[in-house]
Amino acid sequence: MSGKFPIQPIGRFAGASQPVKRPKEFACFSYDDNHEFHLDDSSIRYYYTPRLGADLSKGYESFQKLDDSKDGHLDALLKTIMAYESEQGKNIDAEIITWRGMMTKILGAPFENFDGFEMNATLYQGSIFIEENHAYKVASKEAQHQQQQNRSRRGPPPEVMSYWGYKFETLSTLPSIWAETSRDYIEAREDHIVNNKAQYCSVVRTGIGSSILCLGGEVDAIWDSKPVEHGKPINWVELKTSLEIRGAKDMEIFHRKLMKFWIQSFLLGVPKIVVGFRDRDGFLVKVDEIETQRIPQTINATPNPSWNADLCVNFAGTFLEWLKQTINDEGVWRIRRLPQTPEIEVFKVEETGHGDILSEEFKNSRIKLALKSQESAS
Image (cartoon, rainbow, N blue to C red):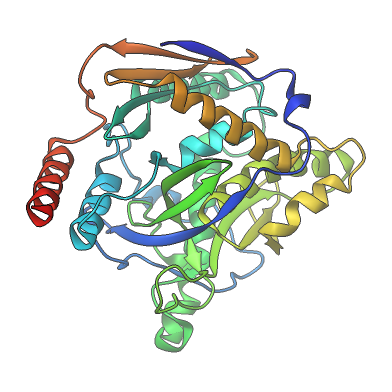
């Protein structure tokens, strides 16, 4: 059945937070410098303080930028889940399987009125698999690019400004722990070619309200090193850039940005966010370390807070419960929020099958697992 989930009035989601399960990493994967998939942690990076005064525009002309015009669906996440399930001999127990980015959009929906989103979903063996609708993503990017081109503005072009975040990551990370990294490497970080094709992705089991989730998402760096024991908290670091705060208006804008920072880190269990503040010309002027768990208190302590963390969680918990009842048979479903509208629509776009959301490799793996389970039971 199709349906519409009203976002407004958001007051009905106020109150103490629904239960949340601490995200626990149970698997991971890496993309190398050529964006080739590896079922390991080879692309993990280690945080190391960057130099203040660094030029975030430096090296833009040699930027090795990822071509994200192709639709990767959930393929890398599914490959990682397949390997884990094969090792464990059973399916994971998640009811919702998706990228962290999709859940970020859902948690932020009560306070994010301007932007819309579109996702594709399918029900398979009791789990709802959700991916971004690639055509919508491409169209949104193009529309945003056109808006930026039409806007008269001073300063560097938008393409250079979007590079600043990747440059900050290069300035703030090492390929190994500090003791195993040469002094030459550390001191030459400002001259290193920036490449955003390499990524480390964490795959976690978590829960919001009554729903169990499996989320995959990129992690920028680690503070120390990964614990040997699976499921232990990991000292991940999320790296962000933001315009330096020079007045009340800047602070208000930064507090709004903190909602997305908090959601992204909260969902994967990232305890620390390092923000590189830059001036309008892209020079690094300050670096702040922010504890993820303290962000909601910081926002609540401001007059007229622009968002509320408990409300985000309660909204997501209630929405996911409704989604599980709505997406109740196979086919491909669309989860859509049109920009500046107070509801999320869910409707079927393909009556049967699973579209391209699930790879044949993944479905075959699940079939083999079921046959093995039957054999061992008989």
